[in-house]
Image (tube, rainbow, N blue to C red; front, top):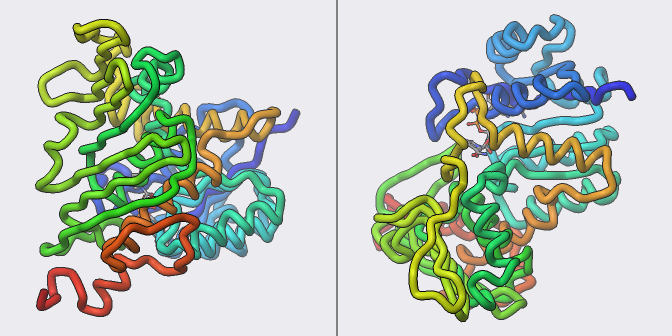
Length: 365
Ligand SMILES: NC(=O)c1ccc[n+]([C@@H]2O[C@H](COP(=O)([O-])OP(=O)(O)OC[C@H]3O[C@@H](n4cnc5c(N)ncnc54)[C@H](O)[C@@H]3O)[C@@H](O)[C@H]2O)c1
């Protein structure tokens, strides 16, 4: 079988100095494709020509495979697989453009989109074009979260009741944390969310505003609830995640314990789970120049699902479950009440409230 032809949109400027303004995720995706025998990195595009030139030199792309216009690249190269590693504001249009030009597998960075309508449109465009659409939630492949999910599925803590999260924030890292809660809970849909937030100091990440503190509670259609407290309130879970069953509990990255521990059903003592030194962000391997084992496992999952008969767990459906909680949480703040799903708004209520001066560093409130 001939290898998949891969192209990247949004090379970024500098992979060596990642910041919350620019992480150059393209290099991390590209390295993972490069390491697979069934993938051939063919082309890249970035609005800024020096960036695509630097990337092209590093990955030895021919000069006629370096573009400043992504659509031109889709039409000229006709790639099978595309990674979209641009800021969230432009995810939707580029995913739609790739789907309309027959790209088979579109792998986009998280957070899914800048608005709820944008998230839904991406999923629709991919579905109509019969393209595989996935999102780069690579932390799913880290042992702390995988082993916790297996413990829950095996009944180690009885019936799952609650997931408490005190990790990161609601939109940016939340796109991982809320997704991971969904994985641990068995990928259910949420039925409602209620939330409040505080935004007094400007914090922009990858071009999007990020609240300073948030509290949210939601319930899945399985009856399992989740609560998330960030910023000043992040002592809630006593670590990153506290997973509570009716007879047992799991802690991930607890404040004073190991990375993963369980108190199994019928026991009173905590047991440390061996996860081979893997952490929240990475497995600590130094064999990657830019990326990590987690990025590799995510790209592997995307490519293996493309050639096989199973869906990638990074699929758009799981992405929508997470996006509905994120935008629904912001809508709850705007409405000052609980938001029942399906979510019927279109915009990003957080950005809308900042724009109208209702909240944010420049508001009078
Ligand atoms: N998975 C993770 O843990 C993780 C970590 C960091 C960032 N991210 C996400 O990755 C995405 C990209 O972030 P980054 O920090 O790598 O970005 P970056 O700024 O390093 O690179 C993005 C590039 O996209 C280019 N670009 C913008 N619009 C374009 C267009 N229409 N066509 C072609 N190129 C375009 C920009 O010129 C820029 O060079 C964001 O969604 C961000 O949230 C994910």
